[in-house]
Figure 1 (cartoon, rainbow, N blue to C red):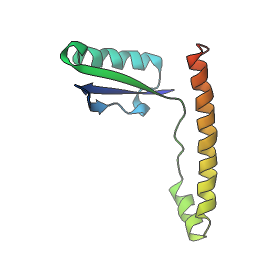
Figure 2: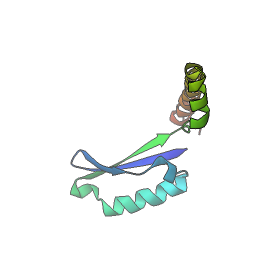
Figure 3: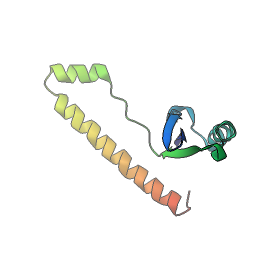
Figure 4: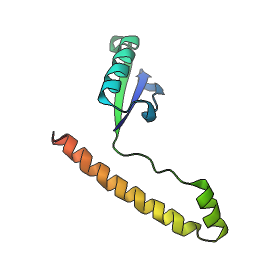
Amino acid sequence: MKYRIVVGHNSKALFCTDPANIKTSDELIRVFSALDNKFPQNEGYYISIQIFLHDSIHVDTEEFREKLKAGKAKGALLRLRNLRRKASTMAQAVYGRLEDGLL
């Protein structure tokens, strides 16, 4: 899993981490602890954590360019949409297991 931490002040987001930088629970604990010390709740700061349950899908731009030139770009995009749907379904299943305390 990947994690994003958002830091805000008085209900306005200030910045967030990149999910690619926090990939383990140990990293999440380390970064959250550091940010929590620097941006205390009693001074109006808030910290939220987002969990990313699946990776993004990389599009090979050279392959896409070739498909576009051959008039087959829509087929390539449809294939990517199908992959994304499968990833989303898997992510929902994992999230359900997290809520149930199974993971």
